[in-house]
Length: 247
Ligand SMILES: C[S@@+](CC[C@H](N)C(=O)[O-])C[C@H]1O[C@@H](n2cnc3c(N)ncnc32)[C@H](O)[C@@H]1O
Image 1: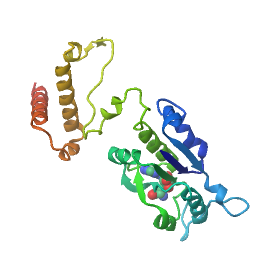
Image 2: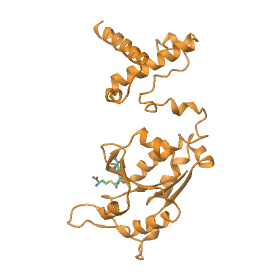
Image 3: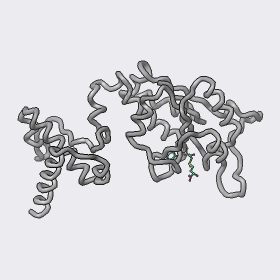
Image 4: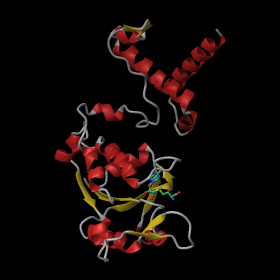
């Protein structure tokens, strides 16, 4: 997969593949290329921003350097142009999975007050947001997208299963995880995990994933059609939870 990123800070974006498991993507399945719109600015001081029409604080990224930069990218990458923006739709794992199956993608990072609206109207295919808060630039958002995609690409995670069991991959939150020792600070690991019965462990994990999702993100359950067995596990979890609350 090829991801082109438009950014005023290329080294920042490139650092996303410098640490941890996603470094493997760089050598195996992901080509990351950064493009600095400053290099496409036509004036001598390579200005990429200007004052906002109508007044008010802050600068706005100019149309021309971004447009020319996009044309240069488009000559070699036909992927969708995604603008990372607090005004976009809320990013989710479904979208990340979809992007991870594409051949290419173009990510546009804004700075200042954002970018000239005409560029968004003319060139951007989709706007996506990290969440309902504002960060200083789209670089961190682009890095989040790149990391989330990279870990889904083949041969990136050590255990191919670990991404498929993550939260949101099957519509649920992940079950709780524990590691040695089996008692720490007086708290024991759930006994089922120590008994070696794989069917029971699997049942417990599904029940915890369902229960956690019910407790923390009930709206996710509304989007799922639970099997009879899953509904039974969730009912068990709810009954146990309610009993604990009463005790
Ligand atoms: C300071 S922000 C501009 C915010 C803009 N004035 C607004 O209120 O909608 C600068 C850039 O950071 C990026 N950005 C900020 N918050 C973001 C978010 N929640 N998700 C994705 N990108 C974001 C965008 O690329 C944006 O152009």
